Image 1 (cartoon, one colour):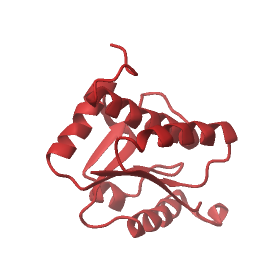
Image 2 (cartoon, one colour):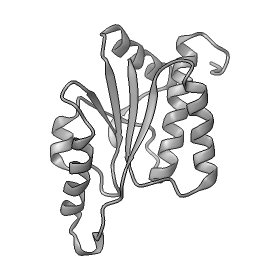
Image 3 (cartoon, rainbow, N blue to C red):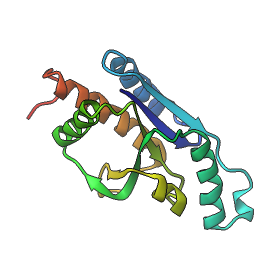
Length: 157
């Protein structure tokens, strides 16, 4: 199985990118993982919220195939404990899912057509995080999930 993270806009803060890189390096021992950053939508001052979400949807759909299992990272999605998320990913692997793609939407969330395309929706927390921090937290949680699956001591419970 391959896992991808699709997100809007580049990571501006160096410390966040360093953290992401740290976990990407660790993850390569477990699973093919890639982050694809689609550009920020241009001229948002002249767009409504719906128009901006639709432009973002265009970017997302260009980076998805029909066979991808798509999971939205959304504040209204299902919450998992880390061990539950590990079991979730393991079930996807056992079901022979080839490619799981997680999406981080823009500031207004996801356009209706992206929600319709999605196979699942999950939340990292009830708290609100910046889109930049979500990337770091998510990559760390994927690493944690694989260390749990392997029975390694990274996760303490």
